[in-house]
Image (cartoon, rainbow, N blue to C red; front, side, top):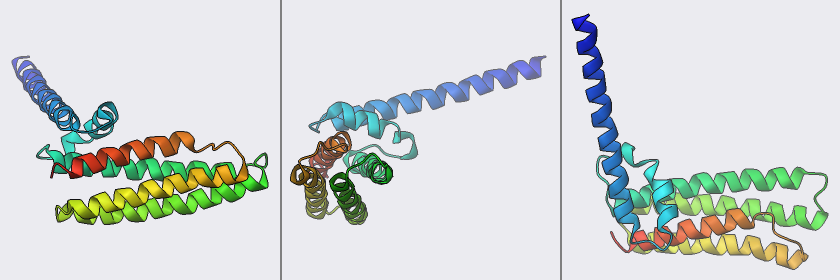
Length: 174
């Protein structure tokens, strides 16, 4: 009985230390994210990953944001292709969606370059890659304007633009 009580106390101590470490990392992320234009978005997307990093600073939060950006861009590509395959989509919308898919692929390439630039603490390249990614998302929106159609990717594009702005702001802090 004493042995199981001791094991339980040890388990609780480890869990408490782990929780307090995660909470501290969350607070550190929130502090870094205060320097971004979309603080809540930064904290929500980076906070999920903070425990994977030994140090939480502008560089690590930037890396977390680029990871979140990449996941969101991949989700946007998947959504665009699913909508393009929908028989209810008009031919103009299908063309625009396929163009958006290509543009999101370009975004993923830009994010790869941004990741490499993070390794070198190259803020200028990071900002350039974010600018190129923003242009790709704006070009996606433009494809729908040309077709005179509502853009079903607006929600994705807006969140990606916001994450890119956060990345640009964080790059100024490294």
